[in-house]
Length: 231
Image (tube, rainbow, N blue to C red; front, side):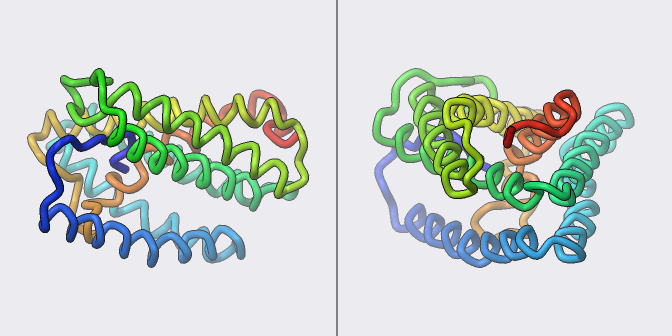
């Protein structure tokens, strides 16, 4: 998902074209995903069914088929897809929960990119992803917190303070998912997990932070008997 990536080199025509391609892909795929989330069954289930083999194939490439690493990666991806479907199909606030998670993860990416690009500064994890900065992390957290609170107001869910805190945590969790995939790519010696999405690379490149966020929120919901975050 390229979260928290700050770029210091001067702009170039190739970089500008790449950015336009990324934006175009997001403009097309984003609304389609939101429509699937909004209408629920069977569309969100179809999205999960399409993503599953693509994610597995990309993990096989990144792990080079090593049994334990590949097995853990598959479990990780399946857990995220099951979390997506379980959360979306909840009878109360199912749709709103997924939209909230998506909004927070996307806000993290946007805030991290722009704040990190403008502020620069110390590297967050130079041995894993040299372009990520601490300023980008803070920017992503702030954007996510604001969007999280805004979602609570839009959905008339209340609990603004808790939602701000949740937005901060989701940003950190999404960053962890991003770094996990970055570490796998670095170990495999590849830039992207795949090439199916123009300007973004593979499916994992686009949803690495979302995978971690979905699993995290589903786990919290299970531990709180389904009452969080909309209590």
